[in-house]
Length: 583
Image: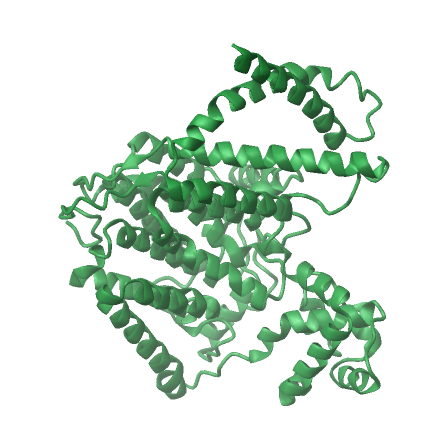
């Protein structure tokens, strides 16, 4: 009785403290600083009373390993939440220092406790693997909503959406002259489709079918693994009602099909992880795995990192069962080198310029010049050779190197002639001006780690061109509806959910932690491809373009579904594992 009374007393105390803490944190300048907290005291007291009564017992029920991991993951999640969601503007400054820090500490403890509860609660809910036999036609059932989505947006923005990159590839097709600034494989893919019907709409239709089928296969695979159909229908509906998917499906970008391959590659790894490598031990599945891997490396230049690093880790983690991964690695590398080498040479394809890789260094140098950072005379002279100093400063735009890269004064040839000299200039500028360089780096890579700032979500039109391509309004009503849905996603209070990939990345990692707690460290393999795809943003990214991380939008829901599956390693019967070739 005494313990219960003490718990109740502590709950009331915490309720009062956090009522004022939340009030001051959420709205520090509000005049009703005494009245407003009164509305929070009762619900917060009940909340803390429940935590104090139940949390210790639930925590003690965890395995020894998870008793260590849950607190660690909760702490990491707090740091991740702060990085992704919390503004660094210190609006609590009007308060005395002790109150300022007390509010921050109490909020951190509340967040930490919330993540503890989150992990412990989700571990109580799980889906045991069943390996059910499901008709292959179920793929089509799940794909139909996405086909309808694609058709709706195609009719709304007929014959599709095309930007400068799209026009670049279409020009290559029309002239028959190819170069690898955009992956030639994707350009030739577009070329083959247009032999049947020379219209962007033809490419959109094929793209919609491919993306719909891939998503349909993912949902089908989860149904085979035992996930309730009602849950899968809800996930399918949520994805199909997302206007972002609609406009992406009808945009002629290499990024769309590439995203599809990243999603499929993720699902195949889920099959591998759940079946302890047995899924890939059939010849047909191995062939499909190799074909999917080729799609990852050939449809975007940055696909090399997600594919080959993932394969390398699969080989290391499965030394005794590494044969299919070694075969995949060697096969894909050989085909990739064959295409990029002899075949490109025979066809006469010009390789892509490596200047694209210098986007972040260019931005950091520009930021130093813009902010009057310290550069030696030799460094200033080197920068001047590439671009006049006033042009560096005037055209620096945090987060987007295009204003410099495509400026008439930017001498890219001079940069390429002396790459080492440019890199020395960059290294010196960063070492001598670390704060400016770090801030510029953060701005340039913000799309990968923060929901703050702007994002380039793309277009809804066909860019001006000399090829006679233009949009046709087939139905004013459909176009208005399509625009209305897209406008809704771009409202300031909703943008982060639809157009900020860091939002999805945070939850992807959060549920990956749940999967690790439930099934062990190997489950991190599931999000490895999309993590490595995001890592390329931190290595070299020219702008805050949503399409670079479109994979986050599709993969995070798959990760959430996977996190609830409990893998039973004692079961040996895997005769009905999800098999792409099953009839």
